[in-house]
Structures are given as structure tokens and as C-alpha cells.
Length: 364
Image (cartoon, rainbow, N blue to C red; front, side):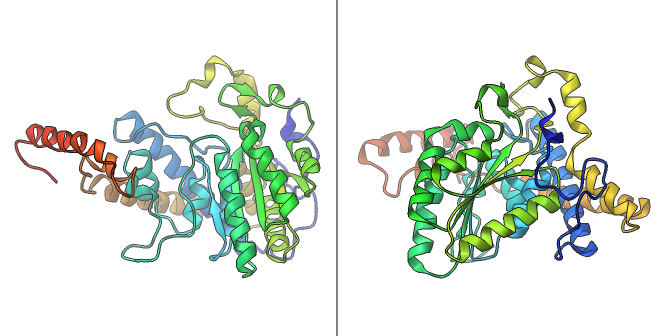
């Protein structure tokens, strides 16, 4: 059974046809903007994988197939809202104004990639950095949303995780607290059908992961995560509800992970090639492109120009990343502690001395 074909909240089907009247906000200009966003972030994703394969980036988690989810979330959040991402959330973070080179820094092992403050700004970003441990970011988001409620500024937090994260106690405790405390928090689950090599069918017996919301006493909705219109509509509605003090919402975004789990994975060991080929028929970028072409809102000439523009933007980001001065080795200690414990000072000094010997007496 292809879960992506099941009835759920959607406006545009996988053939690019309308299955319901578009919301009032969904004008052609907005949808073209969404399409441009998705093409750009997919272009970036391809380049990031290539950088990893050539030794210029560490292990990297592709977001191939989930562009609509990230773009919808990033565009639905307001500036003063707080985004609590997981590791596959580059598209949403890019929409939040975080440069592509920051993502490259992070996956290149540079902790400065977690500093999202605008260049030269003394004010830190309200958004949290990437979270790689599974579902722990959900508990952080509960704390953030609780603070927003206390402050009373009608702001919301949004946290994302994968389908595998919903099996963790961190997630279940978080939605329970969110319901009990009535906090302004939106949970978005990127249900891409795989928790690394564990298929969705072995993770939970419920038909939809959104049903987990019932036990927490919060609304849950299953959305076609390949339809950027449906994703934006559901996310915007949930965020507005949260800002008005009406509590949390759980959004299950149904997609399919078209890539390996990360560049350290080989999904051909556990996935059927026919299933992946079928999933490509539902992917989000070509779906919206077909719709826009049918509406006379996109052409081959525009496509060629935008593809060229995207490659140029990505190459500029890569150039900025590769030309950044390297961090000193001892920052591995410095970023872990506000004040370095006395017993680690000797190890830090030893590392500095070793680095100086390797660099011929030069350091920093």
C-alpha cells in the first residue's frame, strides 16, 4: 500500500491537478515563490552530497523529498516565533534567513554553523540549532513554548522530528505536556516512511501517526507532505491557533525519503527499488511545477534561468564556506563548557602544543 496516495489534507495531487479549491492566500505569485524555494534547496542538497563525497563535508542528511515540508514551515513561521529544528531541516532554516553556508559549516564540523545571529549582530537568534539526538528537541520546544506563554506576547514555537522520533519517550512526554499545559507549540512530524532502516509499518500500529495526538488531548492532522499548499495551509492554521492561546497541534506530514538516511547509509540494503521508483511519482517539486505550467505561470525559459540562478547562489555559498578560516583545534573544548573544568586545562594545552608542532610552530 502506498500511504502517499491515501486520502488526507491536500489541494494538489501527484499529477499536478487540483483536488479542492485553493485557499484564499494561495495566489500564483506565492506558489511560484514556493516552487523557486524548493528548486533552490534541492540544488543545494545535491551540491552538499557532492561535497561530502569529495571529502569537503562530513556526514550529511539529505532532505530530498521533503522540500515542501521545510519550505511550508519556514514560510509559515513569523519572525518572532521560535523554530526548533531537527537535522533534516535546512529548507526551513534557509527560509528563516539562515545562509546555506551555515548549514555547510555545521555538517563540516564547525560549531560556528550553529550561530544563527545575523553577521555582526550582538543579539542571538531565537531559533535553536540543529538537533541530531532523536526527539530530544521536542522537550526543548516544550520549555520554549512554556516561556512564550508566560511572556504573553502571542508568539508560537514549532518543532520538527521524523517518524522514528514519535516512538521515543521524549516525543510522547512532550505532546502530553503540551496538551496539559495548553502551550503555543506546533509539532510537525516528517513521516518519510523510514527511521533509518526501520519501515513505518514496524514503528507503530496506528494507521496515522497523527492519531497519537488523541492521547495528549490535542488536535492532530495528517497532511500530504508532498503538497506545499496543504503543508503551508495546515502549518499556518496551527500556528495561528497557538498564537491565540488555543494550545498545541500535531501535524503529520506524509512524504518519502528519496535519499539514503545520510551519506553514511546505503538504503539499497533494506529498501525495494520499485517502492522508491513509485515514490518519485509523488515527489513535491515536479508536482508544483506541473500545476504552475498548467496554469500558464511557469515556462521552460523560466525553468532554465532559475536553475542557472540556483546553481550560482549555491556555488557562492560553497565558496564562502570553503574560504572560512579554520577554527583552532582547542575550540573542541571551548564550545563544551562556559568555564573549562580545571582538570581539562592540561589536555587543552597539550592539544594546542600538538597543533603548533604540526603547523611548524604556527597557531590560530
